[in-house]
Every structure is written in C-alpha cells, then in structure tokens.
Amino acid sequence: MSSYLIAGRTPLEGEVRISGAKNSALKIMAAALMVPGKVTLTRVPRITDVTLMAEVLTRLGAHVESDGDRLTIDASGELSDETPYDLVTRMRASIQVLGPLLARLGRARVAMPGGDAIGSRPIDLHLGGLERMGAKFTSEHGFVEGVADRLHGTRVLLDFPSVGATENLLMAAVTAEGTTSIENAAREPEIQDLAVFLNRCGAKVAGAGTPSITIVGVPELHPGSHEIIPDRIEAGTYAIGAAATRGDVTLTDMRPDHVELLQLKLEESGAEVTRGDDELRVAMSGRPRPLDLVTLPYPGFATDLQPLMMVLLGQAEGSSILTENVFEARFLFVDELNRMGCQIRVEGHHAVIRGIEHLSGAPVRAPDIRAGAALVIGGLCAQGETEVFDIEHIARGYEDFDAKLAGLGAALTVRQ
Ligand code: UD1
Image (cartoon, helix red, strand yellow):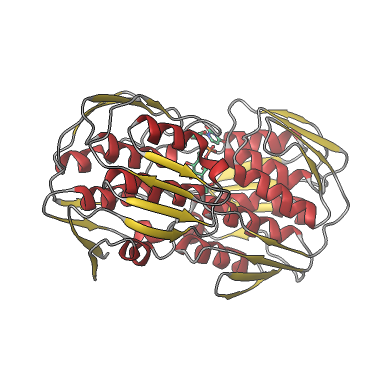
C-alpha cells in the first residue's frame, strides 16, 4: 500500500475540471450487459473501480475496450451467468450485474458483495424486488443464485430509497414482460443518467429522478452511446476542500444543480459561493461557522460528502452536530481525524464536532474512498506534515486525485 506525504497549511486555489461520475459509469457499464451489440460510453472516469467493473464484464464474456475516457462494451457474444468472487468482494457495485444478467440470461450467480468498510450493506431490497418480478433466489457458499424464466412487470414499494436496489430493479424491468413501477425509488442524478442511457438503447423508462419510476418492458435493447454526467461527489470534494483550506477554487464542466444543498451549507459555514451554468466557485477567508448537518438520500445531503464536511466543521468556531442516516459505520474514520487533533465525539449516528483552530499533521490511514479524500484535505489544512496511508482506496473513486490537487497548489508526494 502506498501513501501521500502532504505539506500542511496550503490553500487550494485555481480551476479544476470535474470528471465523469463513478456511480453512474459503474451502473451504465453493468447495464451494457443487456445490450446485444456495441455500447460506447464517453467521459468515463479513469479510476480503479471502473477497471474492476471492466474486468467483471470481461469475465462474464463481454468485450471491453478503453481509450482515454471512452469505453466500448460489446456484449453480443455468449455470456456467462457467474460473477467471480474475487472481483465482487472487492467492489460492491458489481452486484449491479444481477438485474441485467437475470434479464438477459434468466439466471445469475453473484458472490455476496464487499466494498467499502462503511458498515453492513445488505442486498435484501434488491432480492425482494426481483422476487416480486418473478425471480427465485437461493443463497449458498457465499453466492446468491437467481433464476427467472421471464421477469414480469409488477409494483415494487421499497422500504428505503436504496440507490443500488432502484438501479437493479430498473435494469431488470427494462426487458420484463409488462409494466413495472418502483415506488419510494432513489432519486439520485446517477439513476436519471442510467435511465437516459437505457432509453437511448430503446428502453421505455419514465419518472427516473422522482420517487416513482415506471418502466414499460420492451423485447430487446439496441446499441447506443452515452456521455456520463459529471461526478457530483468529486465536485463536492474540491468545493469543500476549497472552503476547508480557506482557498478559492472554481469547479468547471460540472452540474451545480446536483450539489444545491452543499452550496447552501457551504454558504451557511461562511464560504462565498458563486454559481455559473456549469461552474461553481467556492472561496473562504476566515474560520468556518459551525452548523448542523443531516445526511439523507438525494436531494438530501450526500453521505459520501459527510467525511469531508467533518474536516471543515472540525475547524469551525464553535460546535456542530452531524447526523449520519444512510451508513451506520461511516463514522469509523473519526478516530483518524482525532489523531489530527480534531475533537469529535460519536454517539450512535450523531457526531458532536467541537471546532479547533488548526488540525495537526499526523500519520493516518484511509479506510475507504471518501474518508481517504477527507484525510488528504485534512492534511492540507493541518499544521505540519501528514502522511495518509492506504491511498489505493482513493484511486478507486477519484480520477487523477493527486494531479488535480497539485494543479490547485497542493504539495503532496506519493510514497510507494
Ligand atoms: C450508493 C453509492 C454510495 C452512496 C450510497 C448512498 C454506488 C456504487 N455507491 O451505494 O457511494 O454512499 O449509494 O447514496 O453507487 N440497504 C439495505 N438493503 C438493501 C440495500 C441497501 O438495507 O438491499 C441499506 C444500506 O445498508 C444502507 C442504505 O440502505 O444503509 C443505503 O444503501 P444504498 O442506497 O443501496 O447504497 P448503495 O447503492 O450501496
């Protein structure tokens, strides 16, 4: 595992172009399994999770080629129904091949997912919804095995607007017999992007981005191409990074409407936020003001940005309360921030953050993608030097993270 050595007290300043969205690219790649022909995707982020998903698709029998940010996937040949254990346990998003495989082959065998160390992440909502559409599941030896002669349309009411379950059901319903409606569906922009892609390939999906999605089944999809939307979590990372380091950063080629609540929260904390059509400028001069924050499914405040907000609020002039409602174990990295001098106390799914004037550089370990990015931003804010270990987690989700930060004036070196 490698590490970043970071010189502290460096404000981020300048312009950064936002890459394509990881959480959109991974699902659209899985959806390409349903297309018996060539799919071309552009603005695909060059990150490890995309490489892993490409490997999953290849092992299933698809032909995948990449050229810069362009990816072509051809799943017209014979496909296997088994998703390998070694890949699924390294990336939870590989569970998203379940719906497409069931739809295309009528059977699927997928290892139980792994992924980030951010808490127990069951797939009961995925399986329950697919069962309502006619699939039968058994679970043995760490694998879930599903069969379905032909999936049929139905009404699925989700207990919770799970992103992954909404996407799996949406994909499975596209070629099911009849009409499916998903109620209490997740509303994330990545789900809308998936629906736009599927519709380009001949699907009939309406209502994606609202809590009620309707899918009229079609017999088959046809080849298509699609540009992935900008990554709102990457955008949020640099926006919060600008505020936390008391810098001035303009995010370009992004979607300000996908990070509206973040803009409000940054303003509430004292940052100056200027919004353009596809740009956002965030500048901060003094210490942040404390605030209370609650993570919720979209359009609520993104749980993925919670660790970064912890770094900002850790330096506020006063105390903040942060409530985590999506992933119970997302506070695990708080111990690392406290190693950097932060005063954060966790009680259940609440964190009480008593702001301090300066973080202090320390050796810390990145436990997952977003907490890893947050620790790097913390290092840029801190007095002295910080070493963030296990940075491979960060490369799973951020394209050119160190190069983009260096472009904004950060002094960080990679140690192998
Ligand atoms: C996706 C994102 C992740 C983000 C999360 C919430 C990807 C690859 N990952 O993860 O970055 O943090 O959305 O915005 O897109 N749950 C169940 N049963 C299920 C499914 C989920 O109980 O069958 C629970 C989970 O344990 C969790 C909550 O629902 O507590 C949210 O999970 P979900 O929305 O499904 O997130 P993911 O799709 O895994």
